[in-house]
Image (cartoon, rainbow, N blue to C red; front, top):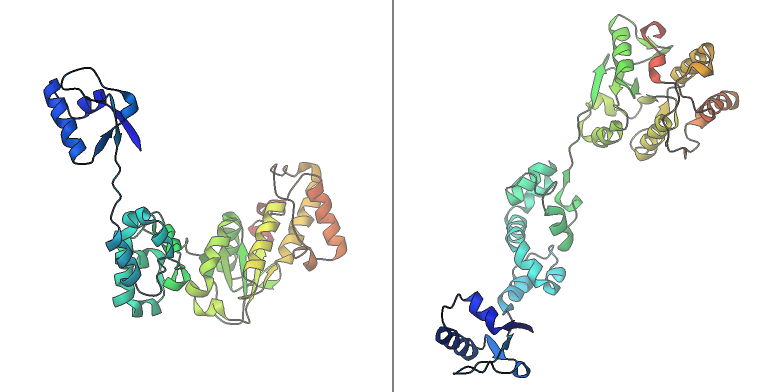
Length: 328
């Protein structure tokens, strides 16, 4: 128990004279709010009071909250955590009651896939409750996954140019914006092929942004783009970071589609780089993750792979912008 001094009681209750202090102390003792610390001794005044007192902490009656946790929630909400952490339940209770009400009366809504913000507003009337509020922690505490709420997290939409919707077709993902614009301009000018490969759709990847944007490909892409017989290519900077973006993208979505390096583009980049001279290429950014696998190299001959690796080992790289509309 905590202690409080006689002076502390006088200050806490703003008592103006000793008689008022004495009466207040006697009242608090009778209410079993405090009890004297006998070892502290008396103050020597009349009527005498002890110099210190124990503050009696009254146990809180949580029986109603326990009963609510036991009998009021739908089976899909686990209350085990909150039974052991009643104070946390008191804090989370308004949000849990809203979740419980939604699952009781609107469970059929879960058959319809919605965005995270839409589902969040449906349940808690706060659109950012899951993304920026305590929603994720509350769901974890009651044993409900995001998947069970049948929602998806929105990303920046894919930026793409459709040259034709005929399927099957070749689609090309480009890491950088300049190359995307130049290739689009080439296709708009009447060409159907880029470096000898017929291309139906160009997709702007925005560097690592493609890893997030492509997450919703199966949900948001046009039907022709999801045709299983399409071939998807990727072209980025020839450095460790650019190759890793490709490998991560291809590995993450290998069950939905096959993504291949756009070899014609990489080989044309290498050809132009050799002409310019290795010493004239820009230095690679320091600190790049060099732990790339074999997925990228498997698409090239051993001779081509060796030339590319020699260039990377020299600390230089080939930016995608080495290519321009004159190449397309």
